[in-house]
Image (cartoon, rainbow, N blue to C red; front, side, top):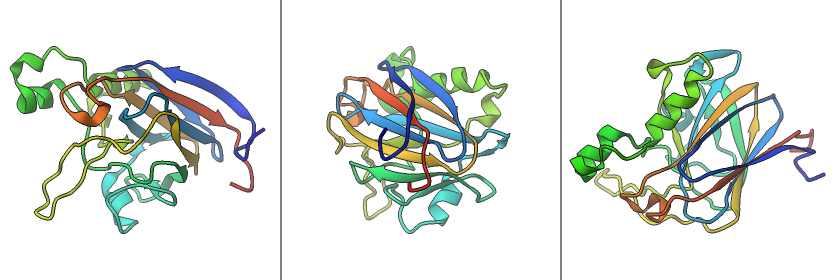
Length: 209
């Protein structure tokens, strides 16, 4: 038994693959960057009402930073808390970079990239399992992705600041559907140009976390 309670499940998500689960209120999800420098794209929905989804706008309005770290609360579009980041061995995670798609790859890197697998496809595959479609695909968090904001407001995607085995942990504030795209991107440094594994551990939680 850990500080997060009893381990309920542990799954390794292959490079480029999707994953999803429903967390009960109080349960904790730990995401491990197994091999280092791997972006893990992330969506969250109120499990009882999936129209109440993670909102980047509400989340950033509720804190003084565009980055996520310990104490950050992921809020839905009604400003209610979905998840709280209770542990973080990296210190900064992206809320602005969005998910890669065939269309954005083509625009950024050229038409030869159109056939490459992307996070948007992973998310569409997973949300369809829960009766959702394209309209339900909202903006996402990019765990472990390093997106500095320049003084002129421009965004960059640069080498990550994570390392093999580092992790973060999120506590569910209500029953929450969480979805992951273990990012397939190979055209920028978010995955070190070589997508790798991530690990998802669900804990029972406890009164002291």
